[in-house]
Length: 292
Image (cartoon, rainbow, N blue to C red):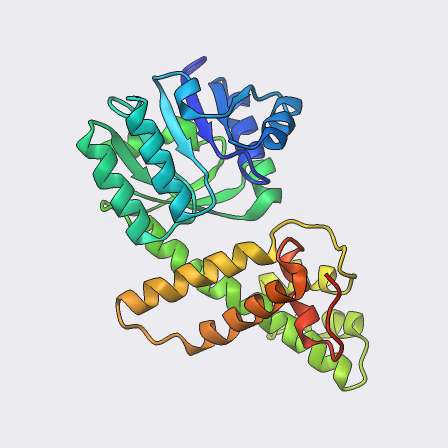
Protein backbone atom coordinates (compact mmCIF):
# COMPACT_ATOMS: atom_id res chain seq x y z
CA UNK A 1 0.00 0.00 0.00
CA UNK A 2 2.60 2.53 -1.16
CA UNK A 3 2.07 6.16 -0.10
CA UNK A 4 -1.19 5.55 1.81
CA UNK A 5 -1.49 8.19 4.52
CA UNK A 6 -0.88 7.48 8.21
CA UNK A 7 -1.01 10.08 10.97
CA UNK A 8 1.04 8.85 13.93
CA UNK A 9 0.19 10.48 17.28
CA UNK A 10 2.84 10.31 20.01
CA UNK A 11 6.53 10.38 19.09
CA UNK A 12 8.02 9.08 22.32
CA UNK A 13 10.67 6.43 22.84
CA UNK A 14 8.49 3.66 21.40
CA UNK A 15 6.34 5.75 19.05
CA UNK A 16 9.21 7.06 16.96
CA UNK A 17 10.63 3.66 15.93
CA UNK A 18 7.09 2.42 15.29
CA UNK A 19 6.44 5.36 12.98
CA UNK A 20 9.75 4.70 11.21
CA UNK A 21 8.79 1.10 10.50
CA UNK A 22 5.41 2.12 9.10
CA UNK A 23 7.13 4.67 6.87
CA UNK A 24 9.69 2.10 5.71
CA UNK A 25 6.79 -0.14 4.64
CA UNK A 26 5.74 2.50 2.10
CA UNK A 27 3.20 4.60 3.99
CA UNK A 28 3.28 8.39 3.93
CA UNK A 29 3.65 9.07 7.67
CA UNK A 30 3.05 12.37 9.42
CA UNK A 31 3.97 12.43 13.09
CA UNK A 32 2.13 14.48 15.68
CA UNK A 33 3.54 15.50 19.06
CA UNK A 34 3.02 18.69 21.09
CA UNK A 35 6.63 18.69 22.28
CA UNK A 36 9.14 20.37 20.00
CA UNK A 37 11.99 18.12 21.17
CA UNK A 38 9.99 15.04 20.19
CA UNK A 39 9.26 16.50 16.75
CA UNK A 40 12.93 17.30 16.27
CA UNK A 41 13.95 13.75 17.19
CA UNK A 42 11.34 12.39 14.79
CA UNK A 43 12.64 14.65 12.02
CA UNK A 44 16.15 13.33 12.62
CA UNK A 45 14.68 9.84 12.25
CA UNK A 46 13.10 10.80 8.92
CA UNK A 47 9.54 11.42 10.13
CA UNK A 48 8.00 14.80 9.33
CA UNK A 49 6.06 15.97 12.37
CA UNK A 50 3.58 18.66 13.38
CA UNK A 51 2.32 19.87 16.75
CA UNK A 52 -1.38 19.06 16.36
CA UNK A 53 -3.62 16.58 14.57
CA UNK A 54 -5.36 19.64 13.11
CA UNK A 55 -2.14 20.32 11.17
CA UNK A 56 -1.82 16.76 9.84
CA UNK A 57 -3.50 15.34 6.71
CA UNK A 58 -7.24 14.96 7.23
CA UNK A 59 -7.44 11.50 5.69
CA UNK A 60 -5.85 8.09 6.22
CA UNK A 61 -5.33 5.89 9.26
CA UNK A 62 -4.63 7.46 12.65
CA UNK A 63 -2.25 5.52 14.91
CA UNK A 64 -2.43 6.61 18.54
CA UNK A 65 0.53 6.14 20.92
CA UNK A 66 -0.21 8.75 23.59
CA UNK A 67 0.89 8.03 27.16
CA UNK A 68 -2.24 8.34 29.31
CA UNK A 69 -6.04 8.11 29.26
CA UNK A 70 -6.25 11.89 29.77
CA UNK A 71 -4.08 12.45 26.70
CA UNK A 72 -6.35 10.16 24.68
CA UNK A 73 -9.42 12.12 25.78
CA UNK A 74 -7.69 15.38 24.88
CA UNK A 75 -6.74 14.03 21.46
CA UNK A 76 -10.33 13.08 20.71
CA UNK A 77 -11.43 16.56 21.83
CA UNK A 78 -8.87 18.17 19.52
CA UNK A 79 -9.70 15.95 16.54
CA UNK A 80 -13.43 16.53 17.02
CA UNK A 81 -12.96 20.30 17.14
CA UNK A 82 -10.86 20.15 13.96
CA UNK A 83 -13.43 17.91 12.18
CA UNK A 84 -10.79 15.29 11.28
CA UNK A 85 -12.49 12.23 12.80
CA UNK A 86 -15.03 10.95 10.28
CA UNK A 87 -14.25 8.38 7.61
CA UNK A 88 -10.95 7.29 9.15
CA UNK A 89 -9.73 4.26 11.05
CA UNK A 90 -8.34 5.06 14.48
CA UNK A 91 -5.84 2.47 15.67
CA UNK A 92 -5.40 2.97 19.42
CA UNK A 93 -2.11 1.31 20.37
CA UNK A 94 -1.49 3.11 23.67
CA UNK A 95 -1.81 1.38 27.03
CA UNK A 96 -4.73 3.33 28.48
CA UNK A 97 -7.02 0.68 30.00
CA UNK A 98 -10.37 -0.75 28.88
CA UNK A 99 -12.57 2.12 30.08
CA UNK A 100 -10.56 4.80 28.28
CA UNK A 101 -10.53 3.00 24.95
CA UNK A 102 -14.25 2.25 25.15
CA UNK A 103 -14.97 5.88 25.97
CA UNK A 104 -12.83 7.10 23.08
CA UNK A 105 -14.31 4.46 20.79
CA UNK A 106 -17.86 5.59 21.50
CA UNK A 107 -17.00 9.21 20.77
CA UNK A 108 -15.06 8.44 17.60
CA UNK A 109 -17.56 5.99 16.11
CA UNK A 110 -20.41 8.41 16.83
CA UNK A 111 -18.63 10.82 14.48
CA UNK A 112 -18.25 8.27 11.70
CA UNK A 113 -14.86 6.74 12.48
CA UNK A 114 -13.78 3.11 12.71
CA UNK A 115 -11.84 2.15 15.84
CA UNK A 116 -9.46 -0.73 16.56
CA UNK A 117 -8.08 -1.42 20.05
CA UNK A 118 -4.48 -2.68 19.66
CA UNK A 119 -2.08 -2.05 22.57
CA UNK A 120 1.46 -3.38 22.22
CA UNK A 121 4.07 -5.06 24.38
CA UNK A 122 7.76 -5.54 23.75
CA UNK A 123 9.42 -2.23 24.53
CA UNK A 124 11.68 0.07 22.57
CA UNK A 125 14.05 -2.60 21.29
CA UNK A 126 11.30 -4.69 19.74
CA UNK A 127 9.57 -1.62 18.38
CA UNK A 128 12.74 -0.89 16.41
CA UNK A 129 12.98 -4.43 15.03
CA UNK A 130 9.28 -4.92 14.30
CA UNK A 131 8.89 -7.67 16.89
CA UNK A 132 6.17 -6.20 19.09
CA UNK A 133 3.21 -8.29 20.18
CA UNK A 134 -0.03 -6.51 19.33
CA UNK A 135 -3.18 -7.37 21.28
CA UNK A 136 -5.90 -6.46 18.78
CA UNK A 137 -9.65 -6.31 19.27
CA UNK A 138 -12.41 -5.02 17.03
CA UNK A 139 -14.71 -6.16 14.26
CA UNK A 140 -13.06 -8.67 11.92
CA UNK A 141 -13.41 -6.41 8.89
CA UNK A 142 -11.83 -3.55 10.84
CA UNK A 143 -8.89 -5.73 11.90
CA UNK A 144 -8.38 -6.81 8.31
CA UNK A 145 -8.47 -3.16 7.27
CA UNK A 146 -5.45 -2.28 9.43
CA UNK A 147 -3.43 -5.44 8.77
CA UNK A 148 -1.01 -3.71 6.39
CA UNK A 149 -0.32 -0.93 8.88
CA UNK A 150 0.29 -3.42 11.70
CA UNK A 151 2.41 -5.86 9.70
CA UNK A 152 5.68 -3.88 9.97
CA UNK A 153 5.27 -3.55 13.73
CA UNK A 154 5.07 -7.15 14.89
CA UNK A 155 2.82 -10.12 15.48
CA UNK A 156 -0.91 -9.53 15.86
CA UNK A 157 -2.73 -11.59 18.48
CA UNK A 158 -6.48 -11.24 18.00
CA UNK A 159 -8.24 -11.02 21.36
CA UNK A 160 -11.89 -10.49 20.44
CA UNK A 161 -14.44 -8.39 18.62
CA UNK A 162 -15.14 -5.80 21.32
CA UNK A 163 -13.22 -2.60 22.01
CA UNK A 164 -11.52 -2.87 25.38
CA UNK A 165 -10.63 -6.55 25.10
CA UNK A 166 -7.17 -5.71 23.75
CA UNK A 167 -6.67 -3.33 26.66
CA UNK A 168 -7.92 -5.99 29.08
CA UNK A 169 -5.24 -8.44 27.94
CA UNK A 170 -2.65 -5.65 28.19
CA UNK A 171 -3.80 -5.06 31.77
CA UNK A 172 -3.09 -8.72 32.57
CA UNK A 173 0.25 -8.44 30.77
CA UNK A 174 1.21 -5.34 32.77
CA UNK A 175 0.15 -7.00 36.02
CA UNK A 176 2.74 -9.69 35.38
CA UNK A 177 5.39 -7.28 34.12
CA UNK A 178 4.92 -5.02 37.15
CA UNK A 179 5.24 -7.92 39.56
CA UNK A 180 8.12 -9.67 37.79
CA UNK A 181 10.34 -6.56 37.71
CA UNK A 182 9.85 -5.93 41.41
CA UNK A 183 10.31 -9.63 42.22
CA UNK A 184 13.61 -9.62 40.33
CA UNK A 185 14.77 -6.51 42.19
CA UNK A 186 13.75 -7.92 45.56
CA UNK A 187 15.48 -11.25 44.91
CA UNK A 188 18.76 -9.65 43.81
CA UNK A 189 18.67 -7.33 46.82
CA UNK A 190 17.99 -10.31 49.08
CA UNK A 191 20.99 -12.12 47.66
CA UNK A 192 23.19 -9.12 48.36
CA UNK A 193 21.87 -8.91 51.93
CA UNK A 194 22.83 -12.57 52.36
CA UNK A 195 26.40 -11.73 51.41
CA UNK A 196 26.25 -12.75 47.76
CA UNK A 197 27.30 -10.76 44.73
CA UNK A 198 24.24 -9.68 42.71
CA UNK A 199 25.94 -10.62 39.44
CA UNK A 200 26.58 -14.12 40.77
CA UNK A 201 22.98 -14.43 41.91
CA UNK A 202 21.75 -13.44 38.46
CA UNK A 203 24.08 -15.92 36.77
CA UNK A 204 23.29 -18.80 39.11
CA UNK A 205 19.50 -18.58 39.25
CA UNK A 206 18.63 -16.88 35.96
CA UNK A 207 18.75 -20.00 33.83
CA UNK A 208 16.82 -22.25 36.18
CA UNK A 209 13.26 -22.66 37.36
CA UNK A 210 13.42 -19.32 39.16
CA UNK A 211 14.31 -17.43 36.00
CA UNK A 212 11.95 -15.11 34.13
CA UNK A 213 12.07 -12.95 31.03
CA UNK A 214 12.10 -9.84 33.20
CA UNK A 215 14.92 -11.16 35.38
CA UNK A 216 16.99 -11.85 32.25
CA UNK A 217 16.19 -8.48 30.67
CA UNK A 218 16.14 -6.12 33.66
CA UNK A 219 18.56 -8.03 35.89
CA UNK A 220 21.75 -6.88 34.13
CA UNK A 221 20.62 -3.25 34.38
CA UNK A 222 19.84 -3.75 38.06
CA UNK A 223 23.57 -4.40 38.50
CA UNK A 224 24.31 -0.89 37.22
CA UNK A 225 23.93 2.47 38.94
CA UNK A 226 21.18 5.07 38.86
CA UNK A 227 22.26 6.23 35.40
CA UNK A 228 21.59 2.83 33.80
CA UNK A 229 20.36 3.07 30.18
CA UNK A 230 16.65 3.87 30.04
CA UNK A 231 14.40 1.63 27.97
CA UNK A 232 11.23 1.90 30.08
CA UNK A 233 10.84 4.29 32.98
CA UNK A 234 9.71 3.87 36.55
CA UNK A 235 7.02 6.41 35.67
CA UNK A 236 5.57 4.10 33.04
CA UNK A 237 5.07 1.43 35.66
CA UNK A 238 3.59 3.91 38.10
CA UNK A 239 1.01 4.58 35.37
CA UNK A 240 0.56 0.99 34.19
CA UNK A 241 0.35 -0.57 37.64
CA UNK A 242 -2.25 2.08 38.41
CA UNK A 243 -4.24 1.06 35.33
CA UNK A 244 -4.08 -2.55 36.51
CA UNK A 245 -5.24 -1.58 39.99
CA UNK A 246 -8.10 0.50 38.58
CA UNK A 247 -9.22 -2.26 36.21
CA UNK A 248 -9.12 -4.80 39.02
CA UNK A 249 -11.11 -2.53 41.32
CA UNK A 250 -13.75 -1.99 38.63
CA UNK A 251 -14.55 -5.72 38.61
CA UNK A 252 -13.89 -6.47 42.27
CA UNK A 253 -10.75 -8.53 41.59
CA UNK A 254 -8.28 -9.02 44.45
CA UNK A 255 -4.69 -8.17 43.43
CA UNK A 256 -2.58 -7.93 46.60
CA UNK A 257 0.65 -8.95 44.85
CA UNK A 258 0.15 -6.19 42.29
CA UNK A 259 -0.53 -3.74 45.12
CA UNK A 260 2.77 -4.64 46.79
CA UNK A 261 4.66 -4.18 43.54
CA UNK A 262 2.91 -0.88 42.84
CA UNK A 263 4.04 0.44 46.22
CA UNK A 264 7.65 -0.09 45.13
CA UNK A 265 7.19 1.96 41.95
CA UNK A 266 5.56 4.72 43.98
CA UNK A 267 8.48 4.65 46.43
CA UNK A 268 10.94 4.86 43.55
CA UNK A 269 9.08 7.79 42.01
CA UNK A 270 8.97 9.58 45.36
CA UNK A 271 12.75 9.11 45.60
CA UNK A 272 13.26 11.01 42.35
CA UNK A 273 13.62 7.99 40.08
CA UNK A 274 10.46 8.46 37.99
CA UNK A 275 12.38 9.16 34.76
CA UNK A 276 15.02 6.50 35.41
CA UNK A 277 14.92 3.00 33.96
CA UNK A 278 12.32 0.81 35.63
CA UNK A 279 15.10 -1.55 36.74
CA UNK A 280 16.08 1.17 39.24
CA UNK A 281 13.18 0.08 41.42
CA UNK A 282 15.92 -2.03 43.01
CA UNK A 283 17.11 1.17 44.70
CA UNK A 284 14.05 1.07 46.96
CA UNK A 285 15.67 -1.95 48.64
CA UNK A 286 18.87 -0.09 49.51
CA UNK A 287 19.42 0.77 53.16
CA UNK A 288 20.28 4.36 52.31
CA UNK A 289 17.90 6.61 50.38
CA UNK A 290 18.60 6.46 46.61
CA UNK A 291 19.93 9.54 44.93
CA UNK A 292 17.66 11.01 42.21
